[in-house]
Image (cartoon, rainbow, N blue to C red):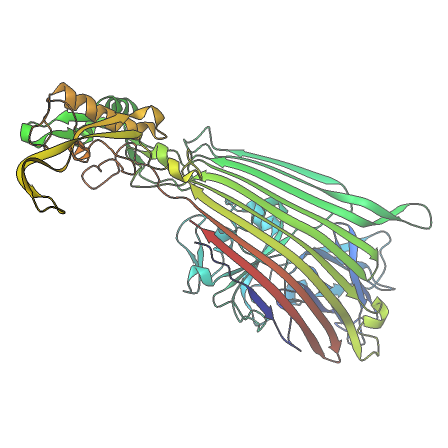
Length: 607
């Protein structure tokens, strides 16, 4: 079956553009002693040693800086006659206003201390002054958490429920599919695929959603990836659980960032970077991603080998024929193991970004993420006898984007002291593409469909069947008496397992042929015709010997027997193309934003 769905959406005039993923910083600078506002003070924000924006205070000491990419910044304030003030670790969240009030208020000390700067740390406010409910986790907080799952990180926010580590989340009782995920302004289709070391911050919105989130009925989880640094830096990470359990968890992470091209100052020294890069990669393998607290039961390896060598036993009551050897196992034939069998998971994540700043008010970012996973799926039905036949799944997700932000005016004209009616005007243009390909299949057959369920080659031999009777010639009308052929009778049903694509299935059938001959069984369907010990018809297999397309008889309807395979194959591909434009400006005390978004989706399924 093949289905394609095309969806194009154009959203609104004079409405905020969805997923702009920029924030705003507001504050008031005062004198520490008198409490009077410090007017015309200079305020700049720094990230990774690079000045990203700035402004000046008005007559009331207030300032506004926008747009700011989400992240953690240092805010520096300076003014003649005052010691420079530096507030470190200020968190700017997507689509939110960060207010520097209370413990985070900038209070400058009069009197210049040569070569000294007053440094304070940012305190995360307990109550958000905005109308959004939720929480923002910074990269520092994320690294300290005992998980690499974005869902699990988000679940530490009040109002979010998660059943188990790595599972989907429910926001305030909504269904898990009502949660929208956004990475660098891109609505996620498929897996997010972002290495933990590449995450700048995760913002979770659980309530008070703005109108621009029109297609989100639950909550929003926004991920912002890190940008380049003004200095070269690298990080290496390795984690393993091999010394402590049987899950064999291994994770290898790498991150590197730095400038490619820097400005040259008038004195010949290097200034801020014009072009910078960031690259992070993560490779993980684990034998069991969701281990049980009480372990898993399985048949012992030597017992399984015996079952394959002797699939059937003669029934105590000869009239019952043969029974599966698996039906006669006892508790001593099983063992409890710590991890699930044959559910190994391999995953590779990559995140890359190039930032260009050719002019002070022009910013271009190009980046993308890639995700590749290959894993075996757990099946409780096959867990006891046939975990080696667990289905295999692969997933490939990649996305690329380009975003251009153009600001208008300089810091002076956009500052609070400026008499301009229109300030902080900027436009943003973004285009992105996402592709997600998901496959599930049997590891041995993949998409060779005619290999599924193929046991071997069966050949039926027949002989004509006659009986005494009278036949009338249809032309002459003359009756004739004698032997009249009334049909055909199967005399031999041969099996050749050398052509099989499923050795275990062929083993069942060949073993049944052998035991049928060994015990000299008679065909039940031809009235004893022919010698004993020879299978005459396919009905003689009695559901024990397998024909093409059949699966082994289950064990007491509780578990699939050994050799029980996954019998399906499917592919699913999702594609998404998006183009966005937005414009924003402050007019007096009001912000006006407008924009549009065009989105096209193509969904295909085959199975």
